[in-house]
Length: 318
Length: 243
Image (cartoon, rainbow over the protein chains, first blue to last red):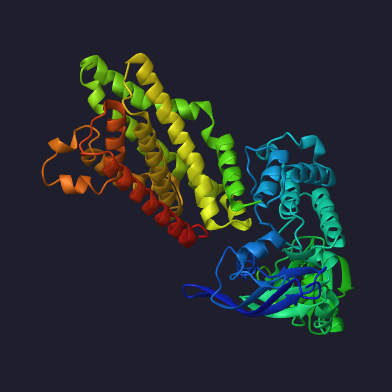
């Protein structure tokens, strides 16, 4: 049993009317791994989690969690998984401690065990001083923390985290990432969806990129990055705002422009020619090129290149 | 721990969160009490004829509304998903929800009964039959409220759906007019309403008289309606709770 993968998905398909949400999705997650499941909005990430958690029926394919089919044996699977949905959804009127104890009851923990577990989780998640505060009165970051704690009340073998750090400030997000690492170190398999690709790269052992319900790529972050090593990337900062369409018109060697952390990420055909053209463009437009660097392709670059043809927030050469 | 203990856990949590709030119980009591007092003030001799019907109506409106509101609210807040993610059978979830709503209805109806006994000296000729009527009504109407709640997204939609059922049966089930006085063409319809049997059981419990020759008939019919409501609710939850 211990050697079976935590999650095995094979040929998973799901449609909603004429919309094909998932098409022949296959992957396996070994026990003890942090697996990042990435994709743009509407790619089918949440649909996958809902199917894996037994909340949605699939149209076709196999879904095994801890050796059991979720549709055939939902109670067995639900005893072994913890789910943190994208919205923190505990009971707003119940205190932090009561929320954890109630969920412990639903998972079959005896009174003494759930009292101990609630106390332990409140301490581990740094919420001990809030144990009598109603969940509804917590800040967004604390709500997120308690929601993750609640998913661990029954010591699940697999934990699904849907956008765990979305909407959190930098400090809270960093603290949560550390918690996710700790949870994983303690033996839980983590299935993570996130839009934050730095987070995915930082946390995960392996990554799957899902685009329009199909698997576009899967492997370690390093393997995924290696697939786009042929990309020539520059990061440029100008003294003033520029119109990316003007840049593309003035610089034929620049293939794609997208904003990235206050600078412009430029995908170029040939670096030397692009540099000359960018300098000429800056001179003509009376701009100063404050900074320009070559960039090693990151997971985000790889992700964007897989999205090619459907770039969400970038300007591409027509 | 057995699924039965989890039913209990769900019920206790709902009572703690929703049904146990004093304003809710007061609200459940206020309308029927005022209605009965106004009838009593007009004609003290006739209030007894409609008291069982008003108690049944309290159960009908209180239980269907509260069960529907709680589940619709939990669907919107995402907390119903917590139950669906937990290792619980759908039967456990339905029973847990129905048990707490039924407890609320029973407490409201018993409080109203107590007020009527203390203030208007209402008799209780057959307490076991009266209790059976209350329990069957509370269970059946809670389950119907739960069914409505999973078929819609908003509370007002649940109320609209329930009103299509509640108001028509209010007028054919002997609440305001005995079955024997209904027009002949309405009588067969009255027999298809679960409220009819609850009213008749309460009537028998209060006055010792009923439109049926024996209380066994409304008792069995009430049990059948309870079973049918349970099956309907469980089937609807299986189909719609995940939507």
